[in-house]
Length: 479
Image (cartoon, rainbow, N blue to C red; front, side):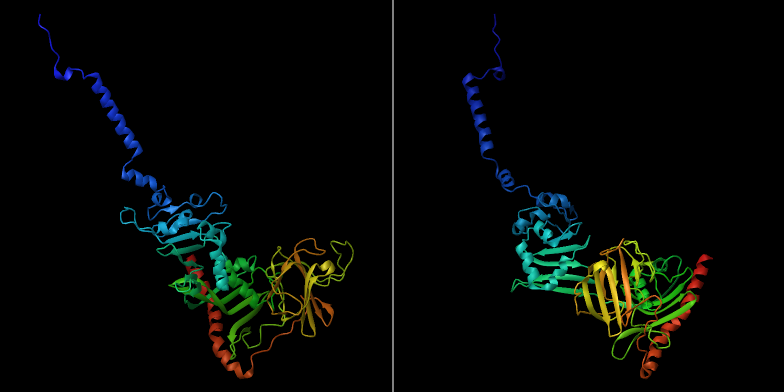
């Protein structure tokens, strides 16, 4: 009987050989675990930083992800080139260091922060890990630096760093015309403040409107900005009480300066001329700068449109109570003379001095609450009561100018709601300010009349042309 032999491949290895092979394999595995490769060790030695996770130039870093959990405020950070998230700036020198061996794009040296609700400059500095002492040093070096603390929602601040991670510059655009900047002086280490203003061109523009419900509504429909509407109300404030005198159908024409930058409208300038028709009476005012350089508004004949007192101390308010010696007091519930005019307005509405003068009293005055009394020469005196608070600098003996804000509407003292109680005294006697004829300012001197007419006649002509021209445009557009 022939015995069948197994092939060499089928022969079993001796048991001691298998044991030896298993031991070698185990040792190799342990070596790999204990001694990883250089590449693995390098990756482990460098923590997984946000710089490695956000290396795309166009990526915007989430403010919540970038901010520290302990910081309740947030700021949107947008990368301008390749920008590091804000919470990594604690190691700015390392982050800004370029490593030739790395395949990453060069790290950026600029961080743009967009201001969000509740942000302060101090909080932003803290999130950028720039230090409170640095901010305090900047603010102490130049008081103008404090303009950076007046942050507005969505305002952008650009922080620029040098190659060593040192803060070189902070800049911010306040408007299309203005920007501010802080630059580090390499010699002294101080940060120098600068403000840049772009030059604009002025274009003379004409607009007109008709009162339907309010002056603001009419000017808005005519495309006139709110601040220009306020200016126009101030021009005619001596003759028209915009709280009670406006009527449906009243109309106006105005010539004003429009500020242009790169063929774009960026604001408005002075009112050059205006005409207002109120209750069938037409008033005209033109702006004229006299030989001494002092601007003012005059009637077309050269008489001053400015009076010693303006009619209303609160813009666009409502008269809630008139001058009435026999009025029943709403709080005391008894007949008590009302020797002034009440202007109802929201709390905090600015109150203006109706004439130039000197403050004779500021403080609490019985039922008047917070009160200011202004003496205008030896004959006139005005009183402003129930204020919520006073404007900065209001104290006994302070000089104020006509139209200057002196305080804010409130309801202090015996008041049922927020309003201004305004009184007008002539030689110590209470006078109804709504009916009293107010004194006017000086007219154009005869020696300057020819110069006045030459300067203002072109604007009068523009007012004359404005109404038919704009009406013709409106009719053609309807066709």
